[in-house]
Image (cartoon, rainbow, N blue to C red):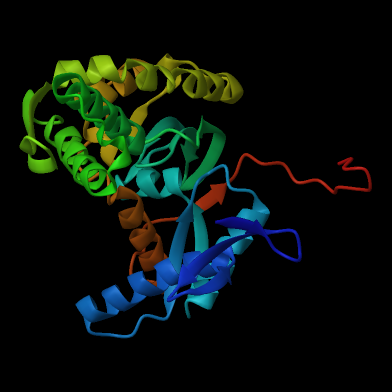
Length: 316
C-alpha cells in the first residue's frame, strides 16, 4: 500500500512475516541498487564502491537528488547522474557526431518516452522530452491476458479472472507470447490443467498471430503518437531535422514499434546494441570516462528543465 508519511511524502507499506513495515521510495530503490551491487560484485569478484546512475530526461532536481540518495543508502558513491537518452546515444558512439539532432524512442515495460537531443562537440543537450508514464510492455501483456480469459470463458463458460493461480500462469504465458511474436508470425498459447470443474480438468490451447496482437493493441500504439508530436513541437524540429534514431527498451524489438519509430524520423533506427542494455552500456562508458579509462569522450549533459525560485503562493 502507498501511504502518506509524517512529512507528507509518499511511502510504501508492506507486511513482512505478519509485521507491517514502511519504506520511503529511496529505501526501495536502494534495495534494488544494493542487489545489483552484490550481483556485480559476485560476477566481477571485486568490491564496487562507485556508480553512474541513469534517470529519465524528464526527472526534475528533487527526483535526481532522491535517486542519488538511494545510491548512497545502498553504499555507493554516485559519481554522476545522467539522462537515459544521453546514455543510449553514448553507447552508439554518437558523441563523435557534430551538430546533429537525435531522436531517442524509449518503450519499456512500464513507461514510454521520446527525447530529442542535440549533439555538438561532446555536448548532449536535451531539447525536449515527452512521454506516457502509464504505457509500456505490461499493457500489451494485459491485452493478451484479457483475450485469453475472454476466449476461454466463451468456450467453457468458466471465468478465470477470479482464480489467482490460473491468472498467474496466463500472465507468464502472455508475456512469452508477446516476446515470441516479435520474431515469429504465430505463437501457440498452451496451458494444460489451468483449472478444473465437475467435468474434470480444463486446458487452454489457442493460437495467437502477430497480426491479431497488433489489431488488439492498436489503441496502445496510437497512444505513442501524442507524446511524439508534442516532443517535436517543443523541440521545434521536424522529421527531416533528425539525423539519428535510437531505440531503447525491450518493446522496441516488436516489428510494429520499429515501423512506427521509423515513420517518426523517416530513417532506419540504430539496432546494433541490445535495447535492454543500451542505457547501462552508455552509463558504463561514462564510468570509464570518470575513471580515466576512456579518453576520447567529453560529456556535458543539459536538461530541458528551467531553474526558478518558488515563493509563497507557489509563484515562481
